[in-house]
Amino acid sequence: MASAVENSSKASDRLYAAIGEFLARHRLSVDPVHYAFAHKVLSDPRGPLAATVARITDGGVRLSSRDIEELGGRAVMGTPATAAGDSAPTPSSPPQLTVVADNTKAQSLVARAQMQVEEFGDTVRAMHADARGFGQDLRASRDAIRDARDGSAIDEVVRMASSMLDRVSSAEARLQEATNEADRLRHELEQARDDARRDPLTGLPNRRAFEDAYAAAAANEENICVAICDVDKFKSVNDRFGHAVGDRVLKAIAEALRAGCNEHVVARYGGEEFVVMFTGLSPADALSTLEGARAAVAAKRYRLRETDAPLGAVTFSAGLTLVAPEDTIGSAMGRADRLLYAAKEDGRNCIQSDQ
Image (cartoon, rainbow, N blue to C red):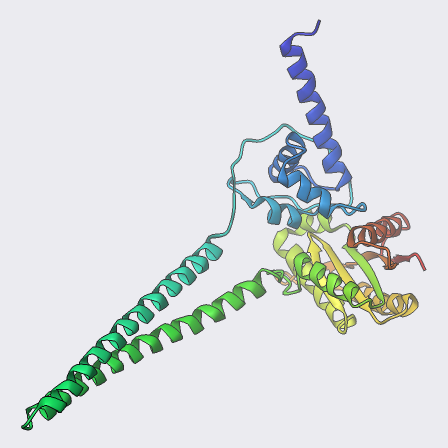
């Protein structure tokens, strides 16, 4: 009969192997953030994080480093994450780290909104009290005028009217100040909402915005083709020239895709992956449009800004599929992802389509 120690050791071995398979399946590099994320998902397979991962990867879509950042926050430790490349990783020993949510800005906006609501409530209550006081004063003035036989009542009415005007002026100033603050807060909330749907590096819509656009197009029963584009051998660019150069490469490709497919939705899906949603085009026309963007990227020759040394050609591969009426976003993206793999296997710098 196996001891508790042996059972625990076997369970740890199974989890360790599962983490390695998880990283390899999603083509994630071995770094502490990716390992810790996989450990969290697989050690609690019925938890909310595992359920979210299952929903995102439905249909064979693989996770990216960006997905992990959005789902798990940021790692509090000194070692930066390594960008994923074309090769499958192998697992390493588990790190010790703490994951925290990077939501300070959102919390600040919520707190300010709550304070604004409370200030409006205070202003309205004060005005209500003033109005009640006005009514009492006016009734008293009416009675005084009716009963008075000299001019003293008129003087009292003038005094109360002046007091009322001062209080009205003060209330208007408080309302104007509250309105101005509400306008500023509304602008910041709109900006935060836009930031939450935009990739900060490239300025393109992010995965969340893309999924919303896809859902809207599908609801309108539009003709949709989707493509997943992946920068070829991007890990080697980061390894040879550093992440700053890698970021500039991503921005250049983002701009080329945006220019080549400017009437359609182009988004950064995560890491070195971009997605394009073509609406109103036949698969042949969508392929032709995307092929033009691919050729434009491949024709450029990049140089290092600092030394003017040649960086060489930078290319991307892509998988393009026509979305069927019965498709979910998961099944459509999974099919596009498999076509992308086929393009990689076919030598890279090409597009595979199922039409």
